[in-house]
Image (cartoon, rainbow, N blue to C red; front, side, top):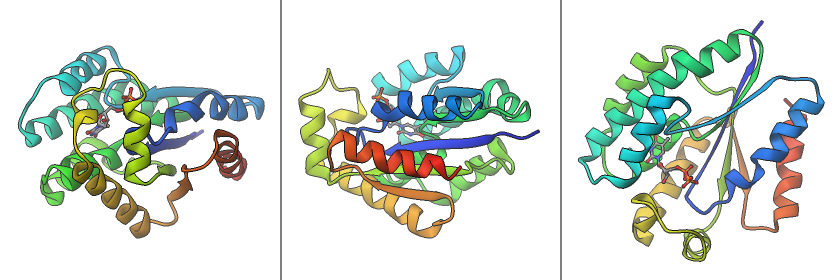
Length: 201
Ligand code: TYD
């Protein structure tokens, strides 16, 4: 038995996390076991690394290595066992975020991330990735009215523009895996788009 691996991606403020409860419900109604998780995090060690990653200034490559350290643990303890028993794994972010944030926005070389990806994931890739896309001004506007920003959320418009471009470029390169959702709409409209995609899984 093999389950399905679904990932959610997008800039901070794109609103992806809001849709997690309804995605879980849609899948459960269809009788699937759903494991909902996140990155960085998803394990006890990963959550400790998340605290450091989100609040401690560090070199961009250190950040990349810690992201993959957390990911290795996440795959070993959560993602792989769940997929093996046939569950649907829903992860709020995965490796596309490393390509968008650490490569796209912070300049880490893509080939280095690719090496880590091969090492840590072997052949594991998401079956489907929902990319919540919003213009940078919208994401920044949403963030400014939300909670206290973390290290990433305090960055400027250029940083977010590079993230958005990196995500869209990845989506263009892998149209089979990616579904780009226009998240600059009402919650209800975005929810309908999400439901339509989930219905096809
Ligand atoms: P996020 O899902 O935005 O958490 P929250 O909604 O609780 O703030 O993720 C936290 C941050 O981690 C986000 O700004 C993106 C960043 N991140 C990376 O820079 N690289 C990665 O590989 C991952 C998984 C996340």
